[in-house]
Length: 330
Image 1 (spheres, rainbow, N blue to C red):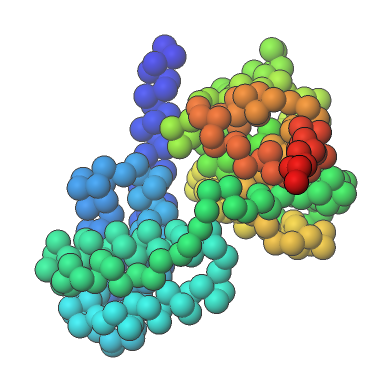
Image 2: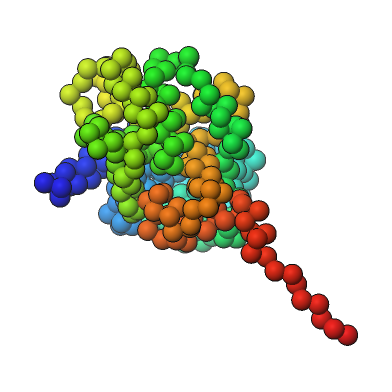
């Protein structure tokens, strides 16, 4: 029974990502959509990427493809047959002015993948694979962007009073802050994942990690119950969080990002996304004295290396293990 349920959830997740990919393709210029769909299939069949990764890569690459096609005044294939190194560099430099390092790294990866795809189609030569500028980065070089305790209280201190579904949005932000899960795990949360009798909640595994089973706190239980009782539309769909418009489909991860950022802006906070609450959760656990292994388990990571970076955010604990540098005699 458990294995059947797991397979069904995997299939359902793949279907969701297929829809998300197509939705992102539809946002691209009409004359580039066919090429982007073929690129998505290539990523799946030739590169062996997971559908969730394909969604990200197609979404980012579509910005690059639209820009190159618009610059040449033609559709995708002829645009890349005539593309130059200068055009690729100009696009990446312009993109970097308005985006952070993480976004630039994602774009860099997507550009290189699309150029490799274009090379296999005979649109560009092999030399174009080196045309994307490199970004110098170092592992653990950046501190995760989370919220301070004061900012977190400001975000959660009062119920949501704006939007079409204030109870839904309130429950979503509370789940993200309380359990440190990813937006996709909130999107995929199902009614049967909430065990009201045992007071537990389970979030499906994501990105090759582990499923997360947590204690259902009183505040979370109350928030979910209010949403399910007073605001959630009647639907045969098993997902907890649904859109407020017919046909009341599953709330997408991108919609969750929009709701979180909107709330932050209204509370006078930086317009960060759901992942900032994951960073906030991990940092608070570290300050509370939880071990790195415990934090990795709570976040659903299989590798301890995935949470090494959080040790940087607790300067006080790092100072506790610092030793005085020995003096060298003359």
